[in-house]
Image 1 (cartoon, rainbow, N blue to C red):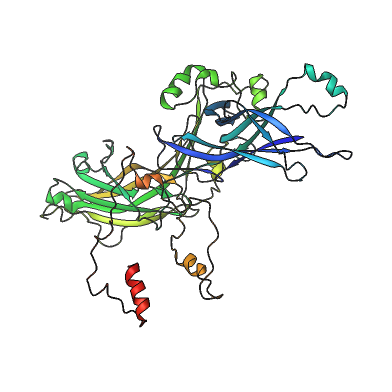
Image 2 (cartoon, rainbow, N blue to C red):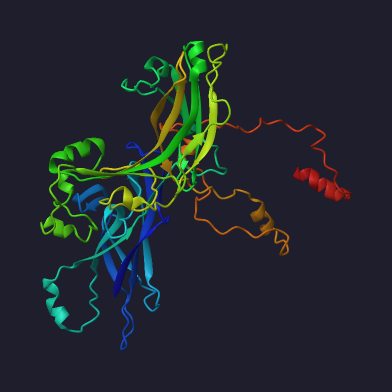
Length: 524
């Protein structure tokens, strides 16, 4: 007799949508398959195999690790969720009636686990097994008792030792779960970009330079920057709108101000940190991670780094350093792209601000490119051990990725009664979010299936699209209900019902005999 188990998730990955939220949860569904087969015998007929199923324990385990030459090794368990799925009392499984077949009999134990919605997406170590990693696993443990078959009378060493063996047997298996995060739920059509507006105030300028623009003039310059709420990490460009104006500035000063150019830079900042015993309470307050008793070394990670034992035993020791974290900041602009935009023509963009009745903005709109590869990554930080690629924005206990737009506006000012020109560089940092866009939903057109059901000849209609998993074309929960569980109002409701006119209900019937007319009248 042979017993085997397997974990079969319903989808290839666990997809989460929107911002990480501690109060939300997503469903991880599938089944644990238990296969039972009778042993093959040359001298006698196969006997039915029977087991008594006692327990089916399923555990979802998430972990994150950081290992670098500067910070050493830091492990952390993100979450652990266990569910017992076997019925009580134990049930008997048997392949009686199918013992002669080569195919095993299978029983599927269905599961549906609620997974916290704040978890960061999966990512692997960089080449060389250094940097940061986040992984998730699904582990199944099945306990059963083999029902003794008293019809056999053969004696063996196994039979003599059977009273001293435990009757309960255990099988274990696991599978890795890829957790993916998307900006928004999938839709039928791509949504237009949504912008976030930042009203920026010029930073204070040092008063040491003689040819610097006076602070009372700079303080009256208003800068309004607009960036997309979310930027697709695979898009390759960042829409950007810059608006400038002055407020409560004298007419003469408005005519002396100029804007010659502005410079932009797309920056990615990665941060790895290590955890200490004294910092664990701080981590618990910011992230709902398991307690210290569930963390290494009290409870080892399910699949720890292969060098973790070396650090735990003290064979590898991180160098003494006061820094508990390491940051790498690099530009995402393509090679050869300076990011400088010069204004052509008359640069006195504020000349009419003081005389205009309505407040208007001087607007500049552009699309900033960014690269997917980082050729000069190693030159930024020689000690950095992260992955050599652009990553979505994320926040985790041990590893963060943040993105920002560095903006510098170059202004000049004609000094009164002088030929000299003062200048100033207004520098701002604008945060934005990189993310992944979910693939669009499949078409909901029922005409292909309708035409094929009519068995039209080949070539009369295009072939059916490939079959999709059940529920793939259903709308996401967040599209139907809000965060409080209330149903959203349809923005485009169906038209109101209008009854047909009496002329529309008349149908010309073919001529028939009286008996048929009487039958039709009786039926109606």
